[in-house]
Image 1 (tube, one colour):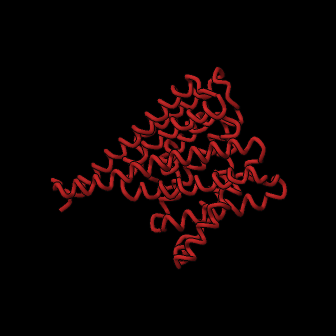
Image 2 (cartoon, rainbow, N blue to C red):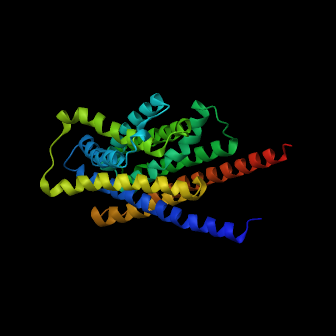
Image 3 (tube, rainbow, N blue to C red):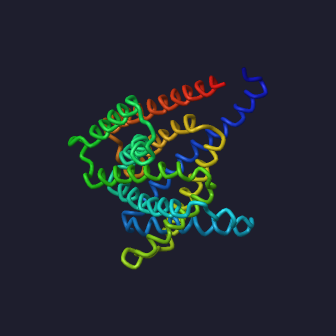
Amino acid sequence: MATLAQKEIVNDRLLPAVLYALGAHFLFVVMGATAKYLSQTHHVVEVAFFRNLFVVIPFFAILVLSKRLDLLKTKRPKTIAIRAIVGSLSLIVTFGAQSLLPLSNATVLLYMSTLLTPAFAYIFLKERVGAHRWAAIIVGMSGVLVIAAPSSQISAIGLLLALFAATLHASMYTMLRHLKAESAITVTFYFVLAGMILPGLCMPWFAKGIAWDEAWLFFLVGASGGFAQLCLTNAYKYAPAAVITPFAYTSLLWSTLMDSMIWNNPPGGSIFTGASIIIAAQLYILYREHVNRQKTSHLKSEIP
């Protein structure tokens, strides 16, 4: 039985974890909304380039000033490189989906990444996925069909881009299983570095240039994305994934508010119905993972 002191320690760590998680998902929506706004006059490749440029420069400067360049050394350069390239593509595709869809629709469709991660773990890592989780994945897919119903009148290309982005996100989460020994700083730095270099190679064809009155918006895309990633990393330091993951759904609230306030586009009923199905499926997967961990822990405790 936990002592009073142990419970106080847990509570002290839980509050900052919750605050970091709430802040992270608010900032991710700010990034998406700003990118969506900029994509009205700029190509998403250009938006993605500046998003990462405004992160990688201060990131590298901090590492130099703190004399921590050793954090850039990696034991798995191949996996780091592949994940960075996939991450760069996923950001461009995500911005593309957000430019074509209402922000709330894109947000909900990106939730599919959590459902796809167990399937990818089964295919690529040979992890066991039980019947309960497969059923939850299938149920979650039905939520996408509700959102994509003809009556919802959303862009078919935007829908496909959002699902492709969710698939790329799931593959990134799966690759993180191979990078457990790597520092979060190492993984994040190479992600934003690739996200600057790869779109940068395409800039001669897509760059329009930044006007002075919109420079702050490009900076906001980078700053909000960078701080969101930092907050999320800290949230997972203070609390397990089962506690942190459900707070991702607060992003639907923020994206709905921004759709209404910025684009005067309040969401229809299908988005909330589909979101309820997808979120319920995700929460059930989290519950099953918790049950499986308890079973494993119980079996280990019985081994003499």
